[in-house]
Length: 262
Image (cartoon, rainbow, N blue to C red; front, side, top):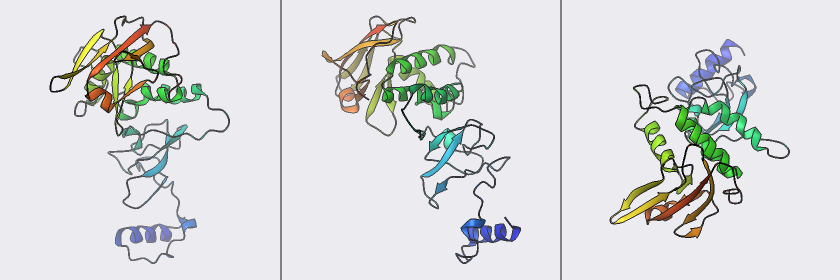
């Protein structure tokens, strides 16, 4: 790309006075600035729009992309420049695949993410296995993170708490539920406590019971909501806020819970 084309492009962007034909699209390289200190994302986006679809890679970058990394998939929100990027917003990453979907393929991305659960992109990631019919992986991952990444010490949080994000992650996960931001759902996880009572309104409460909860029993064998069998691995907001009782039977082995409803 010529320096004249770059200069005209910046003038058109900042002043809006250059004619549309001043910089032909073929002369614009979207990868300029993606490496080094540029922190630019190469994906497409509407000017001043919120949705900016761009690839995410394994190498850390505020914009979510580095040509030295391995491609993980595409997320919807990115910001050019230091201070924010797609990898920090907890987006659901989409990965195009050909052929049969393999859960083990999903696991490779989660393995990369959960190594540093202080980043927002991993706060919801362990629960996404539920949508693949693998609640057992959600249970095992959440229990592992609770046991290894948090501790009752001065350095007990695995990253920036940022208005209570990591503290609330630990509390919700220990209860055995987790709110899905932007939806009216609460994922069922792997409770640490045998009984928890949540006040949800005047004279109303929601109780989570797991009589067999123990370090060696992370898996949910079966669930019952208000005395009725529950096959899906989530609750609706209405089910939680009107009060009730969720009973989880814990096991040391994965079972069929959550495999049918996704």
